[in-house]
Length: 394
Image 1 (cartoon, rainbow, N blue to C red):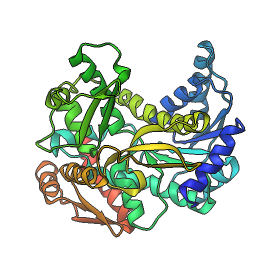
Image 2: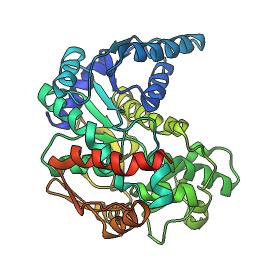
Image 3: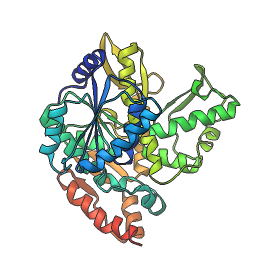
C-alpha cells in the first residue's frame, strides 16, 4: 500500500472537493451505529457504501437508518449497498474497493458475530488477548484486499487493534492505519470523573494525556483500579495541569454502570466516527486534532495521536509532547501482558504462560504458546469450536 502521507494527500484533495466516500465493511451493530452517526453529521460531501454478504439484510438496515435520519432532518448522505461480498473471499473485497474507491475503509466485521467475547473471557480468564486470532481473522483478508487494490483509503480497524495491527505489521503485511475503541472508551469516563471531582459542569474543558493497552480499558472501566500498574496519565482543566488531583480517585470514579450487550458498540462506532471526523476537520480547519488509537503505526497497545499538518503536509503521529514513546510503550506492554499477550514478533502472537494456565483451568483446553500468522484461521476456528461454542451452549 501507499505510504500514509501519500494516501492522506489524496483524501485531503477529496475533502477540499467535497467528495468524501466512507466504506463500512460489515453492517453489524458497530457498522450500523457508525452509519447512523455519519448521516447525522448532515454533511452532503460524505457518501457511504456498506459492504457485506447479504445485500437484502443490509438494505433493510440502511432503509431504517435513512428514514430515521431524515425524520431528524440530518440526512444529506447518499448510501449504496454492495452485497455478495464474502469476507473469506479476498478478490471479492478487492473488487468492491476497486469499484467504489473509498477515502475511508472501516472494517467492522467479526469472525464470530453477535457475541461480546469479554462476556466469556473476563469472568473466566480475566484477559481478552485469547481472542486475538478471531479479531485478526477477517482483518488480514481486508488488508490483503486493500494491498491488492493499492487503495488510497485510510483504513480503520475496530477489533482488538492493540494486538491485531502490530501482528499484521510484524508479519510484513499491510496493516490498518488506525484502531478504534479501547482508549477512546476510557478517556471520556476520565473527563466526566475529573469534572465530577472538581464540581464543574463543563466536562468538555477537561483534557487527558494517557496511554494504556486493552486490559486497562476493561479493568479501569469495570473495577476502577489499575491492577498495580503505573500508567502515564496527566489531567488538565482549561489548559492547566491538575497537579493536585488524586489520579487514583479519578480512576476509581471511572467505574460507572454500562450495558454489557451490543449497545456497548455505540462507543466503538463513535470512536470510528471520531477518527474520520478528526481527519476531515484537520483538513478543513488546519488545526491539530488529537485522537486516541490502539495499534497506531503497528505499535502494541494504545497511544494519543495527532492528525494535522507538518511543514504543509498532512500527517498523523504519536503525541510525545507529554510522555515519551518509551514511557507509553512500556505501560502498553505491561497492560497487554495482563491481557494475555506476551509479545508480537516475526508474525507470531505469543500468549503469556499465565493466560495458558488460566485457559487450562477455566476451559480445560491447551492454548498454543505461539500462533504463527499462517495458523490464524486454524487457531481461530479451534477457539470457536473448543471454547466459544461449549461456553455459549451452556
